Length: 102
Image (cartoon, rainbow, N blue to C red; front, side, top):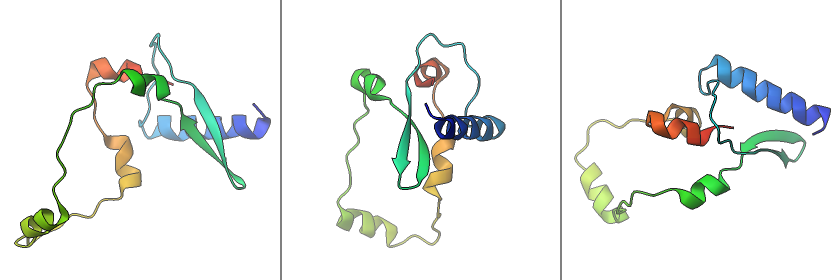
């Protein structure tokens, strides 16, 4: 990795450890990290391809937009979420935490 890429990794780790979005681990399994080049900006990414290949997914039916709008028609209150911030607040079971180590 270049010095610029190493600085990107360190910046990501320090910031997210401080926010407790990530925590130190002693997991035996880890996923590789990638540095994506987005124009002049470097982005920290985790490659979860192997984990995704063995994951079991819950299946949910998506409502048709008309059905969804009918349900929302009588609503009085709506919540607006910033998905970028909420992504790091998704809770998972303790036994799954080691699988997401980086």
